[in-house]
Image 1: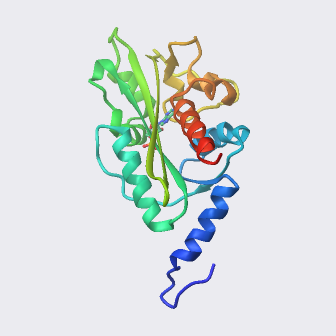
Image 2 (image 1 turned 180 degrees about the vertical axis):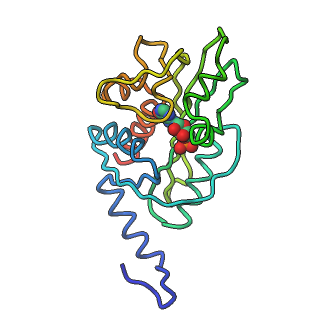
Length: 213
Ligand code: IMP
């Protein structure tokens, strides 16, 4: 890409790059989480959309809703790289804890982890929980576009992983209401047939593919 003396690029070059991406259905996924990338890629690839992972740290706002966080992150990322992209924000909302950890999911996972959540849930009968995910797409032409997914389930009594140690984050303690396995006991294919992320990504792909007709 040609650059100006101050290292910036003219809109023309951003547009050439963006047109190429859109024509060839190539999307950048801004994330530092390789597990998320793997899940998103294996949902989008069969739908004819190629995804590249771009690990770019941005500011994440505090909000109660994944929509607001994802939209803000996508807008911020776009102002920095000027190319069609998606970001995702997800969270686990536990009924008996008033929706906690919700928007604090990443911090809670980093600090008290699954064992800490199980401790908080000791002697609690109501174990209902919901995973929410929002995919935010941003391009020059469309601006921010949001796609939501959710799945209801419950917090298990113990951590349960499959033989191949699959899953990440809260997967070992979340059992969807559609089966007996935790997310961590499922194969990628199984998780991707029903997860919050699958639903959001699938809605995005249906919309995106229509834009290109
Ligand atoms: P964020 O969207 O990266 O902020 O995710 C928030 C937190 O929720 C992360 O720490 C993840 O570990 C956790 N999380 C998000 N999605 C999933 C999932 O599909 N399974 C398990 N944990 C998840």
